[in-house]
Image 1 (cartoon, rainbow, N blue to C red):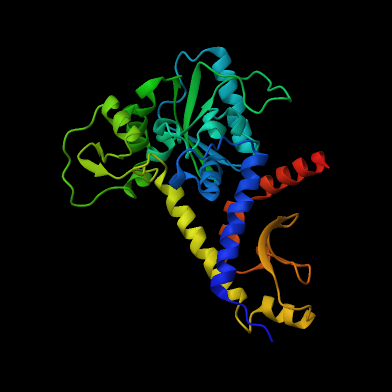
Image 2 (image 1 turned 180 degrees about the horizontal axis):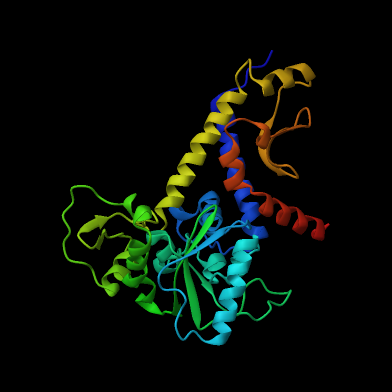
Length: 333
């Protein structure tokens, strides 16, 4: 009679998570040079992309008081209208993000190119306003003179403003977060620091320099002080939200291993019923998404059918990523 060791299974599962993340990194052609050893976790690199990627799903579009945008060039207005339709209909808007979506590398030596610092700090993403049809052999739209800045969540896109494509510290433009504060005070209330007296506001260039140095300054808006709506930046100039998400997923994977190794658990009962010998368990990607696989019995246990595994499946192996991975594999074969 065998007895599964939960710590050993957990260690195997954690390695499996990194292997799965590595597969997705390759299938999406993400830049990942692993130049800095302590920033070279495949799961961390995948999650930085995953959290910035907008799942194709219908969303309600809401507008700040900056809309309609006065004197916006016709081609930019046409592109904006097209993008709004895609948002409402659930189309793929990721090709209109900047190339940093694929090229920002959390593991690279140059700190300022590890992530989108505006998204990491204030939670504001940006999209290029170009209505030219995207050729089939390229992922991104053509670069545009104007960008629309948005806050995206599961069911809503809040359009903050349209600006000419900034450069340098232009992505630290205080007017963006001031517009958010003015239009959606209920949203900003979640980040308000109680009992903290406001000082003087930092300049655009000061915010930019601090971000590149791995510091997220508090926001002084009106007579109140706010923490970073995007959860801020670590001392390595990487997104804090990615670190927290990765740590939470790692803990969940450890818990999965513990549950699977319980004598009265469904997986253990199934394997004992098959009586194929000592299980050799691993985590892998299948057509049904992330799964536990027993090499001994050749049995697959999809995580999507296990209670409490929804977040792990959605963040590590969303359906669109699995489809692309399998499509790439079929092309090679």
